[in-house]
Length: 161
Image (tube, rainbow, N blue to C red):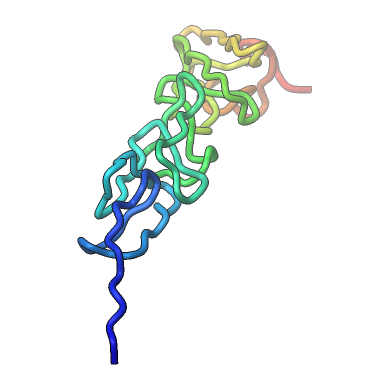
């Protein structure tokens, strides 16, 4: 029985081989990449703020400007979100700043009014926030439009009809 020699190859970028002298290369999996031109033994996880939504990538795809991922190795653009202190509207790729009287957890969380404030509305990425003069009985905080039960109006000072 004659042995047929197998040629060693250096895996191209976007692929890897688990052992030295391998004769075949595997594509990097989702969330991973390899930019080594001369044979990689593994693929690296995409850094935070990027993702690999296809196999065999030589570099990761960056999240839209101002957006990030919570961890390395993201596998789709769905993992991209806003940083804490900012928010997006209906999953858009623009992050807007949270302003005084509000809190933004980041990613796809919507702004929350702090106690004694009311977020009246969000208009083109700007929060319209009203201070309730320190009255948390009127303004308990929470999602856009939250007033205490039985209250309405810009600063929750009206009795609901």
